[in-house]
Length: 410
Image (cartoon, rainbow, N blue to C red; front, side):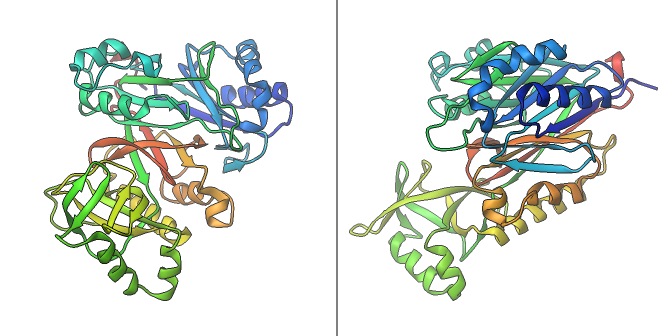
């Protein structure tokens, strides 16, 4: 029997940091039959005053070659009964451990000032990260909420590591102005991005649920400047939008007042666009005089977009649709070993009116695997082959062994 990949997650709500760490370490370690090669640790902002104590306390009880983690407005993990829980606004720690035969794990920390210019060669990015582009690495990134240069980093990684999958999230605090923390082996960081590059006998599959449903029809941007749309199908954007809103049901019109977004089509050549083919971006404002619309991304003429609405029902339907598509595509063995979940602080109970909605829905389709993660200030995941930072999204990174026979022989 080849040595198999193993993952375990433990969640603790013990109010004392010492007790919570002892709890998660004992349960996660006892769930593995081989030593852990990697740890992922998420701690809720209720422990904000004790972030500096976390890694020294953890080192007393856990020996693992690589560990990364961060703070979150809430954490996600697996209870002693094997149920996934999303814990918001209470003291909690989620620890994921992985035994990864045939996988090379490299860790890095970069800050915005170190990032190459976006017109630099791929080699500049490869030198920064310290990971060769072949074999293709899979990345997990945790970044600080502000001034981390995360957008530039994602563009650089996409450029230097074509074919790599990148998932993760931005550390978050409980309230506005709260402090965030990043953890990398024995170091606590307040800025930048900590990351993992996993190469070898592992694949990361992704589900990026942006929580919106399209309304109206796709249109082409015929005139634009940076993030300002000046013409849609050669018409005044604000007039197009007013016509669209007047065609909606009363319930949709109410929703459009506070939950209207645009979806930019990611595949320029796909004729029939469907839910999931769009990168969802916020509407930042309108210019009533010119009839222009400003959105939260740079656009150019020729791109197609469609307006979208977001609410609990749209979010639930979006995630379920993506899970059905994922399940239909699953013909490969071995099956999934674990999942990492990066969910926006704007989802969870505040969106659905009840706890554990996204994780329970996920577990109905992808069963009996440990899930660990946190509530983010921004979620990192691919749409249409490129990696973006999202809002109001749940990103799942599903981990599986590529070859069950490789084990330690790879």
